[in-house]
Image 1 (cartoon, rainbow, N blue to C red):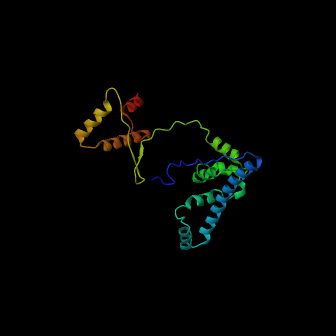
Image 2 (cartoon, one colour):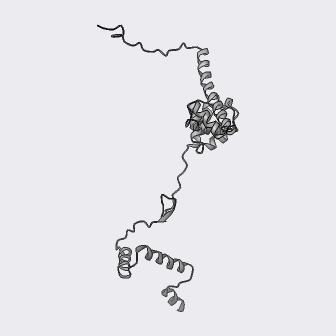
Image 3 (tube, rainbow, N blue to C red):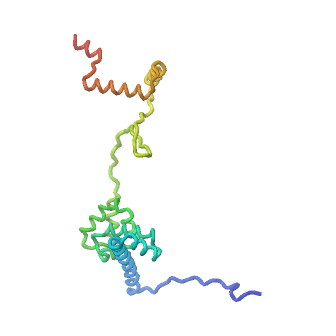
Length: 212
């Protein structure tokens, strides 16, 4: 026996709206209200955190099921603290979140908005686009430093490639004959070279040429 629900296909939900100036205005105004509501809530939440004790603030978040969710709104409050919610009424919500979540990256954009008389989506996107304009890449100087997980660092000499392998064979010979590590020999060689540069050592050829 087939129930009354069997064989009935679900009707597709229609999202068609009547095109009119009133509908368009209402739609954009609703989006503007959402943006303003986000900023109002962010400022209010930041104020509660400042005014309430830690225990009371936590209790407020828990009672609303918001613990852990408040962080992004505190970022919004910190990012747009010099503005009013009305200033960003013509900016869509996702852009607000984007600027706040990456405020360090977009700090110049936010600073420039302080000098803009009318802030809208086009203005913000234009400033973001200008900041993204690639700059000429400067050649990085080669570095021998490597970073450790604990924050320290160590130096590492890159591989030495040469036809006669003279450096490698000489270093290996010194290690075998003198019982020293490669690090000790390199450190000693660098110390001698530095002493020569500072005039503390003189090459025999330099002495001979001076005597002539």
